[in-house]
Length: 449
Image 1 (cartoon, rainbow, N blue to C red):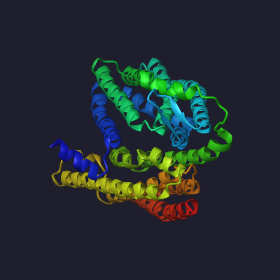
Image 2 (image 1 turned 45 degrees about the vertical axis):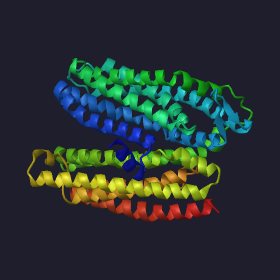
Image 3 (image 1 turned 90 degrees about the vertical axis):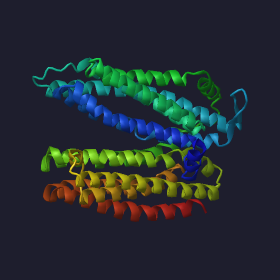
Image 4 (image 1 turned 90 degrees about the horizontal axis):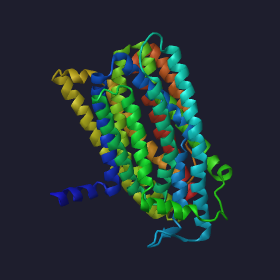
């Protein structure tokens, strides 16, 4: 039975790395659903408001990280493609590549140490200003939990590029295990603290302890020796941030910011025009579809170090073979999961189950499902091209973001939910699939000549 399951997994492209990543994301998705019940059970209506507002403000860390962690994975993979480990966990290979890899590790540690400290005090100040101003007469113990959560978020921002660095040097399966342990600890601690009556402290303490467990894992013998071996290399040749990384990063950063604003506008506009019920239906539907997208995208994200290494060696035939095979598996899994989700919604509505009313139905649901499938292709193309250490999708991202902002406000205000979703689907297909597909084919041909 086990061998049969393994055989099926191999046929659809699930290796051990993808399997661990999928388990991690399944646990994350399941915990998100379960946490709703725990929050409703153990927090008051006001504490619940603080809980979710905490998460919204914490999300501004994306403006500090600006996509640098994903870039570090690619740059580390490009350098490590020319290196290897010996039996004593020492780095073996050309001094030029060892030196550049070491300089990248030093950059990660020094740069993110500063960014993490700035993030901590920024979150602290913004949070105290916001919650003090809009707290009114509500009596909620939020100050200490907020301080702990700011600390946990800052520590997480510091260690993220280290995990990304390990991904780049071929330890992606090991880092998948590290992330899995962190997620499990976070979930168990969160639910335990809720039951014990820790209120807003529950999420803050669970996050902090889980991050500290991450630090402990990275400090283990083998992983620490890896870092030490790279760290001690002389910096005769370095990766210059302003000349090599920044010209690539600012494009990624603008793309990420564009995406951030696109997907955050739906619920506020719907809340103002259609009411809380429709906004909630949109929110939970997007959460489910985003969960499916995240799972299926594991097929491509776990291949980033491989793509980067093949590009560094200019082995484009194998690169295209692996990419084409991966994208077929990815789209197949995505369509299958979305089909199951839509079937569940329609059956629930047919049986008049109350749970079905929590989700969008009919035209908006179908259109959102189509945009998810389209975005899977666009995100895969973008990942493939970004592994070349370039960002050709910058203008596309900015234009799409601007059009989606205009569409969401105008169509949402004048035509409600259906108008908003139709506008979003049209922009996704025209800009993403048509324009994005043209960019992918043109750049692929140009760079591989």
